[in-house]
Image 1 (cartoon, rainbow, N blue to C red):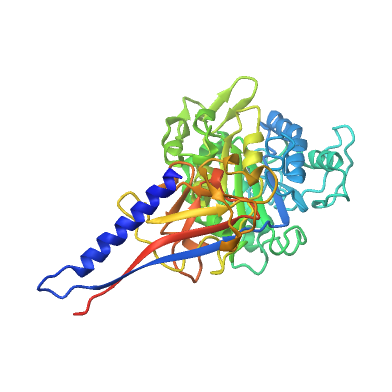
Image 2 (image 1 turned 90 degrees about the vertical axis):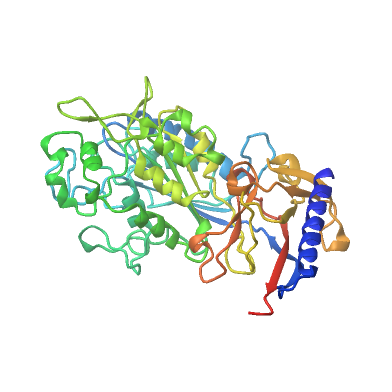
Length: 497
């Protein structure tokens, strides 16, 4: 209650200052100022369909990492189909009602260049994997291009076992890993202006048709111990250092002009849901130092990319060998995934990065559980019809409250950070009865748990007003939540102008 009083006093003080300024007596013509309270409401709704694509590195160094992923797939499936993120028996979000899962590898070949370990020009060509790993007990030789889970129709443990059979892709793939290009080519429709190796069209509505559904949440999770080496011109491989027998990743780092720009993947992934880019979630289990990614909700990407372990440099040769971002005995060695991290940074907060050098991958799998985005009356998530005026710290004169869901762990304000109980709901205000109403903390820039004003949302508000609010990943409102943003707005007109 004390926090509500403080905000009310702040709003009142702001009104008094503005009104006093407008009423001041001076010889010059003063602006005609009007102050009003503006409010916008949202109601979050779950997205019933989720399409999850795993991009798995199938190069020679990935035996242990693939095993870790497949061991943890049953837990991922359990969380998705129960909604119980912390496994305490109480759902934190509505269970997934309709799930597609598919796997592609990072092997797109070498474009015909003579590169050791790359057996064909196009590799696996970003086609959804249908081969099962028959070396594992219970696995069949072939599977559908994507697996479908609908509660009551498929038994969860069987679904997880089938996914593990497809996800253990082996280690005979090309040593030039192209996870970003593989994901983009697999999902992009042929109607897109994007072109792939040799002028090829995207596979999304052709070879891989049926995997993506209209209106679904798209989740891409890349598992690789080396950085992305998505070649814009595969023939450049012959003129790079890897052609002389050095590690292929030295060539990638030394010849960035041969690679596609990062913007291709940021823009390309968002274009898959152009009307609501927040329906695209990107996750990576890759080469980053484990100690730099312990707080996935507030990952400092600038600090991560500046860390000396994340720099592209070579150990003394010959031949030259890349410096690792992490090297954990018994877990493996991973190279700095700078490009993958930069894509995640540009897609944040709908992105999560974890280290492949840690034994437990559950953090990234949990955090990449599909975000249940909501659409407001302006056609995109959390877009605003007016531009609030932030102070020097980025704080705006607004208050955000939410009426929590009627049941489950999410019904309580204390169920997630950045909130405090304000009051119980009041039907006379049009609120459903018997629910907690929370005051959500404003956190300029998203530096702590809470919401913040985003003056540059990019294409999240296409064709609309270029501002919105955003939430840190640990504070994203759950489904069936009523959200109200109330702001003080000032409009001034210069009578002399």
